[in-house]
Amino acid sequence: MNSNNETLLRVDDLVMHFPIYRGVIQRQVGAVRAVDGISFDIKRGETLGLVGESGCGKSTTGRTILQLYKPTSGQVHFEDVDLVHLKGEAMRQMRRKMQMIFQDPYASLNPRMTVEQIVGEPLMVHNVATGKEIQERVAHLLEIVNLNPAFKDRYPHEFSGGQRQRIGVARALALQPSFIICDEPISALDVSIQAQIVNLLEELQEQFNLTYLFIAHDLSMVRHISRRVAVMYLGVIVELADRDNLYRQPLHPYTQALLSAVPIPDPVADAKRKRTILEGDVPSPANPPSGCRFRTRCPIAEARCAESRPEFREVQPGHFVACFFAERFIQ
Image (cartoon, rainbow, N blue to C red; front, side, top):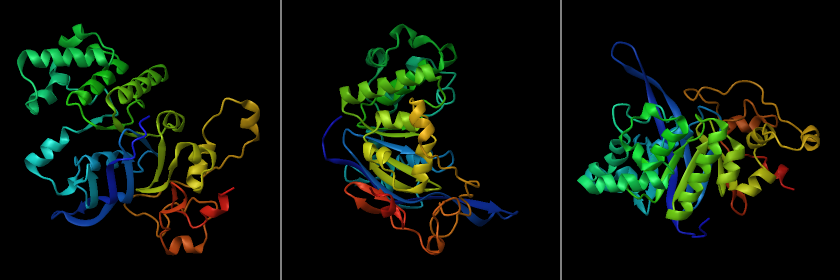
């Protein structure tokens, strides 16, 4: 891991609401609060893990950072440039430095294009290379992700899921970016293949000094690849800390519940540990609870949790949490 303390990406109070329209005249009657005011930063060369239940807004966060969705409000500073206000050619040039590896290797590749066309397309779109140079660059990229360059004339349906995801990784690397958002890149793959892709991502990070935002709901894999971890629930980040601190001493009840569900290889220790069973369902992001988002399922919620939203604050050096009672769990 790179120990550089330079901040590459800073997200300040990012909000992404999707309007809900009804009726013949399509009148707005509400909004889905997919991302509702989150802040964090990522140092150059590090991996920040973003975890949470399905539907909590993780993927929307990634796409909004890259401006695939224009945010409702907030700021996204990449290399001290606010991406929210960039347009046209300026945004196009900035996209060369930021790429995304998508979750579904079956849906993210065009079935009508060959591997050479898929991996070479970013080079062509950004006028980085032409003709024979594209062919040489594609062959080199396929070698980097451990695919045979002779496969360049094949189509996506001729590959396995793991091989398709490697093609997606090669495409993301084509423009030599400094920042890559990995949007659950292993969740659609067999368990035996997941470790291979994660190991590849780690090797590439070391080789090219890449910075990752690694989105996942597999807590054990996030612990393996990430240096810091942010926990998201219903559009907000509830805890952010160094990986080891978070797993050793989670300070938010939701994080505690998530970690208590992770299996551990020691059957004696597993039998002794306390499990936190959450009651009820996740509320709708179109109508979230007042105050603390987690209060309707929280085992320690009190009246004040419904009255005001807890501040996302630093309770220990580098350990941020949005809970009124976080100090109770500090040992």
